Length: 278
Length: 326
Image (tube, each protein chain N blue to C red):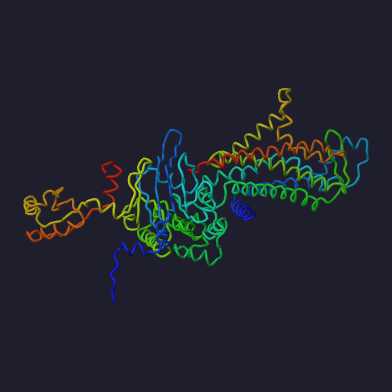
């Protein structure tokens, strides 16, 4: 299995499409950092204006943790679109290229092939998030230095800089499960058709529709809202509170992992039954 | 002192072990059927391939050849019927069987963004075979691609991809090689090389080869046994020589004077074998051993024979079979 995953990783990382996500993050994050480097003080002043009326604010507020948190907050919604570029292509791309025939005539079960592709895709997803973490948190800490983190979530929360790294680590860990859910959706779409564009567009459409549904505050959607994975994906934010609501986090993890298992299970069923005609 | 042994005695004294090996069924297909909704691509197909056969699979476009090959390689699941390879049920022992099968299915597709070397290395690793540099170069040399080992496959011509397809099929040294139109896209020299390779693999390496081809002349040269299918149904199966010898050939005699030849032929016993007289060419329907007597007869009667051209017998046979004339 390790050999199969290694082979799939080689196939993923030898394609230019794989690097679109890294390129997007590699360009976007420094642009945000440059903008904040020059206009960061006025940005922080604007953010803490009300606070300054009551408190004396001191220390380095425009620090790497704040920038890392801001970038994670704004980019995590867009990362799914970069993930489906690879996830949607993993199976359908083999069908389009005709290489299904090469793979499936090998002495390896279809399930193992599928599982290796799934693991390889998950590793790609993790590497993309790791890159985001290095670029947004690592690079920001180097440029802007350390300091306490101010978080606005309806109320103002201040976290000591000694109390932050573990929160970021758990938040990224949780975000990874959310992103693997997105990857699983695109993987399932990829198993359905023999053209890579279809699954990519379909997965993006599903994510957009679910984002819209999650934003609509109608009672009609209340029953399904707790089960929408796009809502649960945002619960990485819960690690940035004084009393972390672990029960909600566990519930969200259960729902996300449930989605992953269902998406993968359907993909495995389809792939196993599939007649390879390409 | 000499001792005469009758052939029957010889066959009975031939060790059972060797006789069993020669008669061993490598592929055994029974009642194989594949339906796509209302369309039946393959209908109750039976076929047997023995060890060491170069077994040719013939049929017009859409006859069900590729569907059958895909079922043999577990790319498609049969609707009905059984496939045994090396005596084992394909549905139950898929991986064990495929470990000993090399194949090209239709056009040779590869990971275009990888080099030929990398493609072979990855595929070899999945097969858990030797993917050492020397082994890969040995195979690339065999198909004449050693100088382009480091080029990405997207820069390859169709013929080069076809050669790489053969390389990947042979990489893990399989006992059974399934080749679906292996010479498509190759130049005449390349086609000859593939034919020679098939002959070498069969005769010297004792490989069993299941070959599908549209090039009937090629089949006639390399195949030992064949099957012809049409519309998913088996039309004929057997030894190539036996099947072809049971049929008469169309033989063209190019003569100097057609008027004289016409008079001589029409007043002889060969008139019944004459099919057509046209532009200094007389066409006869003859068995293989009747060609020389006709030539002798014409020459003795003073007709100069400039050329004798037998028509391609398999092509005639194939067309008759698929047209339902046989």
